Image (cartoon, rainbow, N blue to C red; front, top):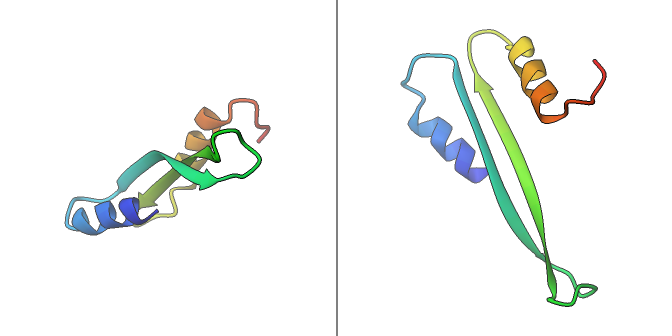
Length: 70
């Protein structure tokens, strides 16, 4: 989350809308696993513009979750 906010701050002077996404792994300690940790993949998307951009967000969700009913 901090990485995408930093990227948005550096690009605030660019023409709007700004569309950014980031995918990353987070390692969490887990005593139940043999190796002592598990990885969780996280996805974050950011849309900055003068309008709400609902159709952009809905299209993004339909791509990520193709079986989701709208």
